[in-house]
Length: 135
Image (tube, rainbow, N blue to C red; front, side):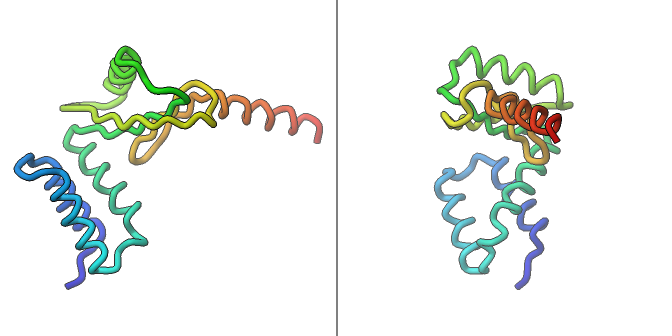
């Protein structure tokens, strides 16, 4: 049986909205299905589609990358910012990621877009601008 990626993503997304089974069980079921149907190369796309579906029903998944662990005040501020940009939000799910290579600031990654406010991005932008003037 061949299942389209979008159909699979919708099924997974709907299952994530129901709290009738442990997350570990759902993850194991998804992993087993993906492996048995040789869909591992499509896993990133499938999970992006899941997040897009969840966003459409009001659940915003955002990966917050920072150089240091976020305080609860920082998380609350990020939630307020995210609330301004999306309509009909039921909840915001923040996945914090610490990456010291960004030096400082934060990067917000949504399913279909990102907002890079990191020091690393600003330094790269400065480097591009100064290099272009010499050419």
